[in-house]
Length: 541
Image (cartoon, rainbow, N blue to C red; front, side, top):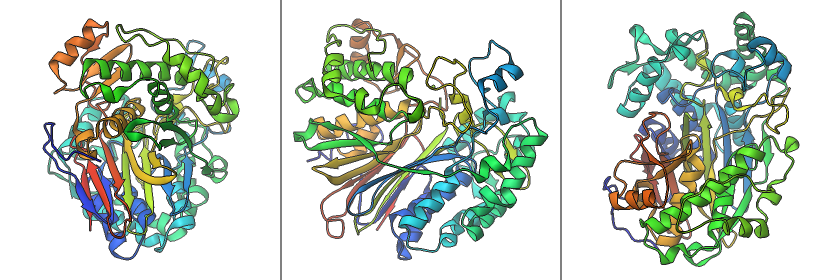
């Protein structure tokens, strides 16, 4: 169904394989492939790659990250929500008392931005339920890399150096000792080793994660929090469990129909991509040129409508006043679609019904298992806090809460905040078609939307869809990636879009990875793509 032309600047071509791992760092992709070659499955490969990513891309994730996963086990889809919960002490009054009545959210950095980290629990849960190889084997490549070190690549170094210029990060306890060797960020090609993280990985491997949540590492985390004014306790860590969930979905008629995009349900923002696709069902995008003003305008407006509802209503499910089913109601989305004017840009409010530092990876094997996995510290190095002796750099997902008592996403004990990271999965007629994802804060659902439309409505192969210049709705503006067609940009301005310039090195245009099934995986295999926006690689055989 695809065209295999290479119409965009990267000139990359897709990779074909029966077993494949796609990540934003070559060493992680190789680690995953090593598990597949040893007789493991796609889950084993994904865990090995995810563990490596905490070492080779610390500017985006770490041992204190959160994670989500959607996987096809050979017969059905499963979802895993391993986002962390607020400490028991976190109430609105806790933050107002410490930071004043004018505070709008928990702080951006430091221990008061840290929820219980969930990524390690995701690795363990996935391995126990679906893995084939011993859990300790899966962490061996990451331990080796952490101990021996690796040469820091170009994109990672740029993000690392950007963080090193921010006192709000570098002055957090433990950060400089861990991530500023020689008093600065590593240079491109310079060796970086992380033996303290290797120590923690060994403890996780030996105890199947127990040390992290109910043992030596948990005790160190809680002690560090107490020493630096945080509320996290050993009880908060011991009580944490990831949650198996049923993915939510939206049918899409592009590409001849039968396709359904699946996302993890709230507290994540994946529902934004589903809302936007549901709105676009009411327009014939395929009749418009792929990079035309008309097509891009409709997609942008659908995304703005989706965000209007998501930012108003999405929170932990038990706190939401609307259900995902209500937000995806077909009649409601048809009414929302009527608000789009093909001739002018608009600002939309919610109907009835924020920033990133993330890695995404995907793996698939010849037996048909496909894994879509995402892991993140948020806002680059997250909270900036690193626990000495253990190399645990912690996310700052607590900053995703609000202190507005009237909102569903208000902070509360044991509650999960609004979350940006989202793995994607596409099926056709109930069968697996593609595991994929895009990184970058609120760019993630926008990347899901744009790449899916390119593949389904316009027949672009995964690598071309990955390479194409993107737009990003951000802060009332539409930011266009370098290389975006100049005439189309002018056309969007003429329709009233505030076309701006985007310069944030963390919040770029959403690098991603894609694995598309070509039939029987044991015979036909997969076609795979990895994004040139980061040092992505597909490894396969």
